[in-house]
Every structure is written in C-alpha cells, then in structure tokens.
Image 1 (tube, rainbow, N blue to C red):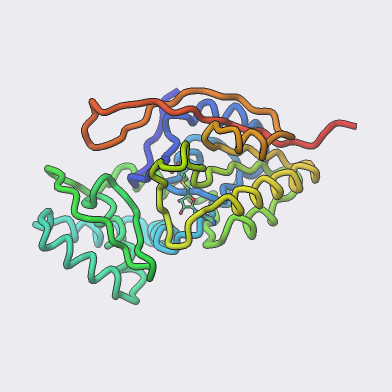
Image 2: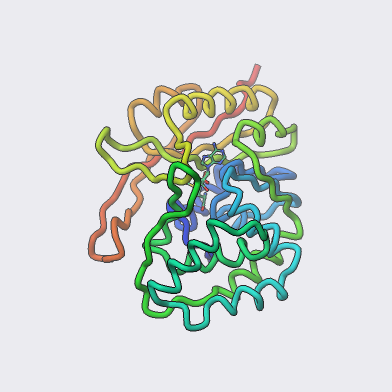
Length: 272
Ligand SMILES: C[S@@+](CC[C@H](N)C(=O)[O-])C[C@H]1O[C@@H](n2cnc3c(N)ncnc32)[C@H](O)[C@@H]1O
C-alpha cells in the first residue's frame, strides 16, 4: 500500500499504521475522526464522507483555511518561509501567532511553526500560548504537494472544532468512528504528550470508552488506538482487540529508537 503522508508533523501520527487501522474500520458511508490530528487515517482511507474533528482550534482553522483558499493560501504561507529559518525570526513569528486575531495569518503562522519548531511538537502553556522552542532544521520548506493532496481530498470532508464527546454523539448508523486519543502514559514517570493546556487524564479515557460502548450499541463500529497497558485493557474489556509493537522515535537522533506496545480495540454491537 502506498501511503500518503500528512503535511503536518504531528506527535502520534498514524501513517505507519494506516493499513492495519483501515482493515479494522471496514466499509461505511462516512468516517468520523474525533481526534483527527494530522489526518493520516483520513488521507489513506476511502469513504464518501468524512467528519474530521479535533479540539485544537489552530489545527482546525488551518484545515478550514486551506480547504477554502487552496493555492491562494499556499502562496501566502510560502512567503513566511523566506529567510526565516533562524531563532530570531522563529520567536518573532511565535509571538505574532500568540497575539494575532487574524485567522488567515494564524493559519499560515501555524504551519510555519510546525515546520520550524523542535520535533514538530505542538505544545501550549497554561494560558494557551504556543511555546515549543526553535528546532534548528537545515532547510524547512512548505510541504506544497502534500498540502495540495490534503486539499483535494477535503472536498469530501467537514472540519469541526469540538471535543470528542460532542463529535461522537453525532455518529449515526452507516458511520464508522476512529478514535486516536492522547495515549495513557506507559508508566507513571513516562513523558506524556501535551497536545493542549487541559490534558487528557484517566477520567477522559473512561468517558471515551463509555461513549464507544454507547455508540456501538446503536450499531456504529468504533475503533480506538491506545497504549497496551493493564488499565486500558480493563477499560476496553467489552471490545475485541489486537496488540502489536510499533517503533518509537525518541528524539531527532534516528539511532535512538525503541518500540512500544499498542492496542487497537474494536467496539461493535453484540449480536442477539
Ligand atoms: C494522537 S493525536 C491524533 C493523531 C492522528 N491520528 C494523526 O494521525 O495525526 C491526538 C489528537 O487529539 C486531540 N485532542 C486532545 N484532547 C482532545 C479532546 N478532548 N477532544 C478532541 N480532540 C482532542 C489533539 O489535539 C491531537 O490532535
């Protein structure tokens, strides 16, 4: 399978697992992704419609702007990549991003920050300011081809800024739902990816599993990815799941690799 890579660097991006996920999802009219992130599953699956949601307003604003403006936006964003690969420009652009109310400008700055920040980390402080440091890449560029591919495919998609519960409640018969939440940490001391100021604790993991059961009971298949831990297996005990190892890149140094155990859980209505 030839895999299309998303145009954003996004921690937890699923492009390496799309074949496995796509098999677990199966056929449906519409795919709903309550945690769309960089959209790897959207880009590599084929449905008539997509509902793509996330609670990150900067991400959804970027997708909506690209969808609406296409080439005009790409040319506008390209200007930000000229003579700006240095710490001074990066921190000036980051300040502008954190203070701007202009949504088009914010969308362009968001992709600039994503390509220039450390490890593509999308990190916010407690007051919601983007605070990832400068990444020191050799020659970051605007990923024009993959932006265009994303834009083409988004003719079949609706983008929505919402929390996962609100998105999941929109599921109807004929839909399939793929959830890729922030994972539970593998250990109490493990680093936890911080996608937003509010975090994603055990209570939210429980709410997600409860909603998956509720929606599955209505006849909608729900597939969830997470780390393979005893607490997750307990939470997903009514689902069918498969476990597997995935490579992890711990830092920019590609020799520093490791593996982690993941789970793919499928919730579906019990047959009478
Ligand atoms: C593991 S990432 C998804 C990665 C995605 N599958 C991909 O391929 O890039 C988790 C996503 O969940 C979003 N998120 C975190 N908390 C959320 C919430 N309460 N409701 C909706 N989205 C949330 C984050 O903004 C992030 O984009």
